[in-house]
Structure formats: C-alpha cells, structure tokens
Image 1 (cartoon, rainbow, N blue to C red):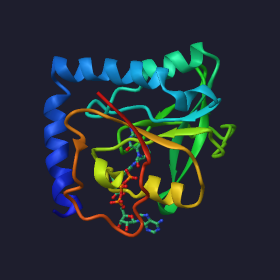
Image 2 (cartoon, helix red, strand yellow):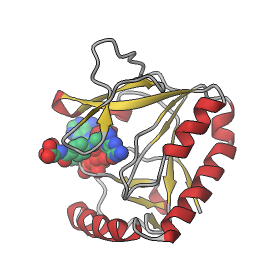
Image 3 (tube, rainbow, N blue to C red):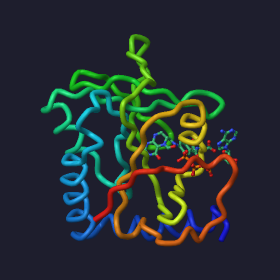
Image 4 (cartoon, helix red, strand yellow):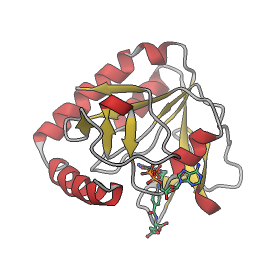
Length: 181
Ligand SMILES: Nc1nc2c(c(=O)[nH]1)N(C=O)[C@@H](CNc1ccc(C(=O)N[C@@H](CCC(=O)O)C(=O)O)cc1)CN2
Ligand SMILES: Nc1ncnc2c1ncn2[C@@H]1O[C@H](COP(=O)(O)OP(=O)(O)OP(=O)(O)O)[C@@H](O)[C@H]1O
C-alpha cells in the first residue's frame, strides 16, 4: 500500500477512535508503561510533542516528567522541513502553528537537540520492520538522520501493525523501541 493511502485511512480511524473511552484507557496504560520504562531511567533530557487529539496523549507524561525533575523539549518546525527542540517549562510561551500544535518561537528559546530520549509521534507502527508512518512532513526522518539518538514510540491498538503493509522509503528511519498496550 502507498504511504499516502494508509495515512488517509489512519487519520480517519484515529480521529474516530479519539472520541472513545477506549482511547482514553489506552492513553493511560501507555503513559504508565512509559513512565516505568527502563529507557527513562538514565534519561534527563526528553524530547516529545504536544499531542493532537488523534495521537497518543502526552499531557500527563509531560506533567510527570516535570515532577520527577527531568527536562522536557518540544520540537519546532523550521524552513526546509528542518526541526529543532526547545526547552519546555510551565513558563514557556507557545504560539499555535498552521499544523495545529503549539510551538515555542520566542527568540530566547533554549535550543538543544542533544537529547537523551526522543518520543516519536506516529500514525502507524510496523513491528516487523520497526517502521513508522507519520503525518508526511518528513521532519523526524530528517532530524534523526543527522543524529544517533535513542528513540521510542508509544503505539496504541489502532496504530499497531504486526506487518508493515506500506512501502517504506530509503529515508525512513526505523524506530527501534516501542511501547504498546
Ligand atoms: N503532535 C505533533 N507535533 C509535531 C509532529 C507530529 O507528528 N505530532 N511533527 C511530526 O513531524 C512535527 C510537525 N509535523 C508536520 C507535518 C506535516 C505538515 C504539513 O504537511 N504541512 C503542510 C501544510 C499544512 C498547512 O500549513 O496548512 C505542508 O507543508 O504542505 C506540517 C507539520 C512537529 N510537531
Ligand atoms: N533525510 C531526508 N532527506 C530528504 N528527504 C527526506 C528525508 N527524509 C524524508 N524525506 C522526504 O520527506 C517526505 C516525507 O517523508 P515521510 O512520508 O517519511 O514523512 P513522515 O515520517 O510520515 O512525516 P513526519 O516525520 O513529519 O511525521 C518524503 O518525500 C521523503 O522522501
């Protein structure tokens, strides 16, 4: 299957799922599993996103990372599909982007891409090839291609595929670690 075709299908399925109690329950399980994950133990600087409703909810994770004294970094999109991470605290001023997520575009933002762990958002995850399907901007593939960072994805029941049923590209970076329900 072409990526674009599966992306459209996943957007529809995940939007529908986002309105259910099951989605909320899965978010809670994924949050708990992530917070207990050995990947987090020695990680101080964590990169993750502010989730859209159709994505795995990251809000409680961010709150708990702050409580445990870890540093949270959010991506911001730059020209030419580049991306960088900015430090996120309760005081950070955010502005809404056309994509629909808030980002820190303040001139004094603290930029740091040397993260200990990056939680990578997705629409689909193919277990057999550690393959990831995202929104199609190619932001994470470009970002990860330039660095050797530890990555993990949180994958709910609608996002999980035992077999990668879409055609992967040369530039797709596998996400080696995943946590699912
Ligand atoms: N919650 C969340 N934040 C995230 C991501 C994500 O997947 N989830 N991203 C994961 O990568 C980055 C943003 N990804 C994007 C992916 C695609 C387009 C995109 O297709 N833009 C269209 C124009 C849309 C518009 O401006 O109306 C385009 O460039 O053609 C934009 C951002 C960073 N932040
Ligand atoms: N490192 C790269 N260099 C040049 N082009 C790239 C690179 N990585 C990805 N691309 C291109 O960017 C486009 C979008 O990539 P892809 O469909 O994999 O995005 P995605 O991983 O779903 O999106 P995102 O990471 O933004 O969620 C593709 O045309 C792909 O070939």
